[in-house]
Image 1 (cartoon, rainbow, N blue to C red):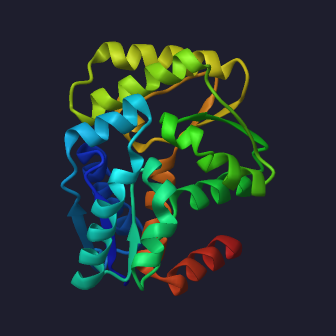
Image 2 (tube, rainbow, N blue to C red; image 1 turned 180 degrees about the vertical axis):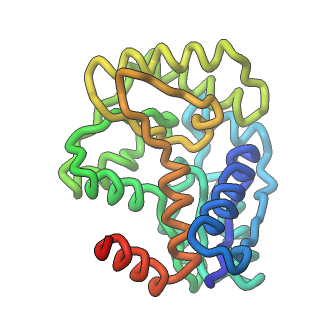
Length: 242
């Protein structure tokens, strides 16, 4: 098994959920031992986090925290790194340049997941940073997948909802408002991705549109990487034989 290093804490609940997904996902595929996991909870100032989520500004202040976390995890023995936060992937190249071990991408894995299922267009629910930096537009474009977005008013509302989740202030009204946004987007597209891992905490569901959780997609891909290429090959072979 490979040891995964998680750059976590943005937000904390999602990091905890991601950890559990790795534990249970690994158990489903390999019942011989627990997966080796390291977590660094970046000590980010709340104001920095709020400025990015609400005002879409100050993202460069994240970089020192992320690089420090990556280097700590590498020094601690991680074989590869992951970030269970979509927005932080705007800095993935800076992090990759700062360490000698691979940094796995939630964006790349989600694009691959959608392409494997022959999905040609998808609605994107994400932070304003993820949208403005065209994080998914580039990755999906390479797979010939079109993206559809909420309007500006709905996007601002999503930012506020995500900030409430991160600060553990979210209430049922946040979920209700979010489901209205999902409903509106479902009128234009058949598939939606939660391109902010914190949004899965609202447990959104819809009978009108298929919703894919990028955290779940990334957790499954991370489990395969923990277990190693030989295990992934064996699973593929068994599926083929069946």
